[in-house]
Amino acid sequence: MEELRKLEKVHSMLEFMESRGVSNLDHHSNRFLANFILFLIEPSGDLAINDKCSLLSQLIPTLSSSFLEDAYQHHLDTTKRENSGFQQSLVENALLGCNQTKEYSSLQNCNENTAMVGLDSMQMANSTLEDFCRSYFMFHGLDVSKPQSIFKYLPILSFTESYIYQLDKMNEKLLQTPYNGKCVFGEKDEWQRETKLLVSCFSNDPVRPLATILEHKGLLTERIREELRLGEEYWALERKLCSALTNKEKILVEDVMKAIHLKSFDYRVLNLLLYQLQGTKVEELHMEFLSISELLVEVADDLYDYEDDVLENNFNILRMFIRIYGPSAAPSMLVSMSNCLQMVLLIYIFADRMSICSVEICWLADNFRVTISNVLIKLPSCCIQWRLGRSISTYY
Image (cartoon, rainbow, N blue to C red; front, side):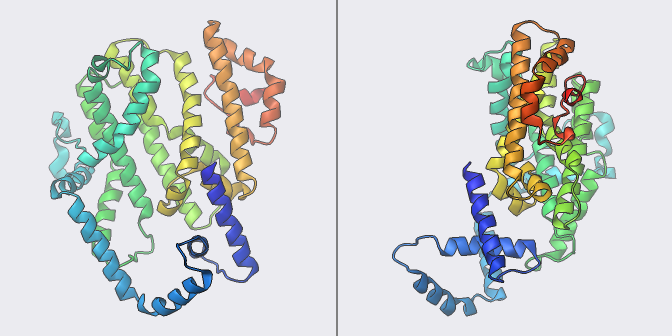
């Protein structure tokens, strides 16, 4: 809710700016000005509004592009000193490891060193792994409070999530790349080199090194391979949607809903891997239940990460809904969708406790038709097609 309040403030300021003629055709410029104005009117010690205006009048002439370039370089130098050269080397090697060039063709020998992950990716993947252990281990009869339950399967799970996370960050970095070939502060050569490497990565089967290792370990199934393929499809959709948003092109709600569903593919990969590691059969009812739960989690995460996703040009369902439905209607659309998902989760929980099979869930959903339809009345039909064996939307 805090993110929604911030969003409301920004859009309210944008409307105020437009009414006063303080805006232009560039969306990013307007958003920058709106945030800047909101920053200026925030209390800051004993400074009054007139004091702030006077301070800006005095100092803005000194904020030349050369000064900002020096400030940017100072920021980079500070950041580089905080990060070890070893960690930076790992990131660069990870990019190279993803690149399917001749010198890395040792995949055919199942070289385990080919699929490399950086230390930063392993650290950033920890939050996902912790959430996975807490939320999914119970479905496998594992006690998350017992270290042996975690560490027995941690190497494969950690490596897999770290590798996927690393590719995800590379894809997001590609989204941040200027498509007009102009860099902010003259780093054109570095940007072109890195962009070429990133484009090469995602055009040459980026998950193949991971799939090769899993196959070598006897863990790769057709279903895991398919989820990895869907992960590539999500990254392509993210690039398509964010590019359309940047270029003010039409965005289809079908693409948005498909992307938000595919976004949790890494959780499904980890879940399927855990079945393989334990040598047990996949429980379909649990997989279907968790697919609905994953959607709810993704929506909640996107609300929390909204500001960062806008600044970094990442996929975010609220950001997409705002473009499709407008800033006023988008939050209520998300609330309606979340209510719908929670209702479907209740159906699954009830079905599981009553030992109802997957086929009978659709019959159960039909008996909840009146209640659910009140929630779904304002949603497009594509927003409610979930993995129930067949679409619940058939009933409405």
